[in-house]
Image (cartoon, rainbow, N blue to C red; front, side):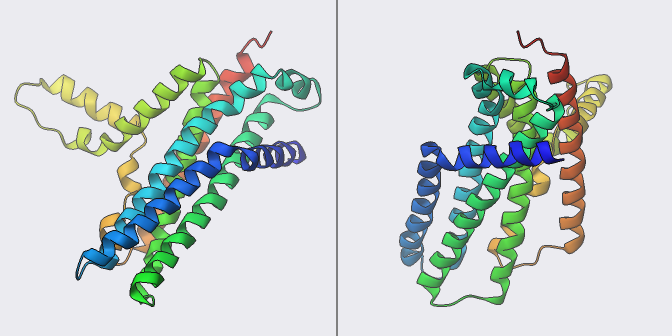
Length: 258
């Protein structure tokens, strides 16, 4: 796994130098700062407003980072011709992909942690202290990070066989469809025949169910996040990510890079 660690470390360093990354993180912290102002004029619900806007900013900025940097992981290396020199060494293609994935997830982890710290600072600034239930924010941030890992894997998969622009569209489409996956399983329509409904339910199980990662409602209102839910979602994210990365490695191994 030394090759994977080397590629991951290089990916992390390159991502940290990316100015776009700093701009997005600054935007998220700015949103959290705006939450303080909004919270101060929201009498009685200051905490709820800050947590809601803060978690939303963390999620949205994380999605942009995972989407655009995830797609660029492969295409940028091909454009700069550095990929050919790298693969000429004893580095397998799946090691290259896995290293890129791990490196970007490390970057997302650091940036998500920084934004989460900003959210806690915002809570302290307004409330002059924290509540015991604020610990559940960490669970929400953790689930957001798992969601972002799946998006990175999808971005890598699509970037292995299509152009960066189409890869962004496909990944964004999968994200939107994943938000609706749960609804597809419970849809009832008198105008749809049973075969179509069955087909829609089947498709829903192939899509990543991103609603599983949304615990903002319980966290905002101070309710706990069940440990069983966290473990189930973690296992789901690991399994889905592994399947997508395996597919990406199979596609990338057959791609003609000449």
